[in-house]
Amino acid sequence: MIAAVLAAVLALSPALSWERVFSGRGAPASVYFRARYEDAQGQGHTLEVWRDGQRRLKRRTDDALVLYVTRAGGEDRYDLVDLARGVRIKVDRTSLYRIGVFSDWSALAHVLVRPAGDAILTAAADRPRQRTPAGECRWYRVEPAGQEICWSARWRLPLYIQARDFKGDRRTIFTVLEARRDLGGPGTFDVPSAGLVELDAAADMAAD
Image 1: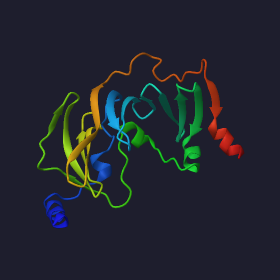
Image 2: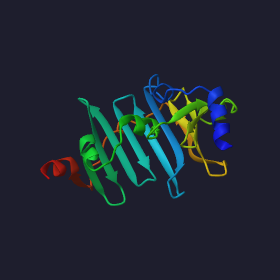
Image 3: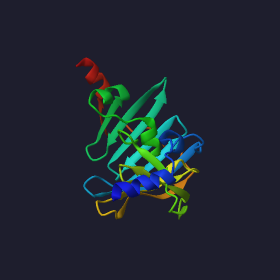
């Protein structure tokens, strides 16, 4: 029965291209947003992101971890600051791949990771445009992941992400609380070093 209903819905709503719908093209050059999300264990976290076009990125999670990403010469450079442990770790994307961490600019800057396998994306025709504190967004369904994403064409961000349980009930797992075109002062993307132990993970992995 469920499969038949899903097939009928998909027939009425043609599948869309993930890369085209959730593209970062046309995003404002400067974006700051603050969001709330749930991890896999259902624990709540706060995320702040500063995005300077396609050049620099800063992500702060729970006043505990701060990730800085700088793009230069086709290679992304990462600096992770663990505020609780007082450690700054330098790493590059190649080194992350070696240990099985597959993060890229698009996922970090726009918060969405394309599901593995055959993801079917359709417009949620039965859900009107959503008004939020950060502006309007449009709902899309992702099957078989069971997610619904309210995408902002203005900010190039999901303003809401909802997951469905086995009963079909929706649960909001990601919410943008505010968004603006303000990156703060000139030192926003300066990676701190004072009082921190510095580790170079890329150099250590290359030596190994």
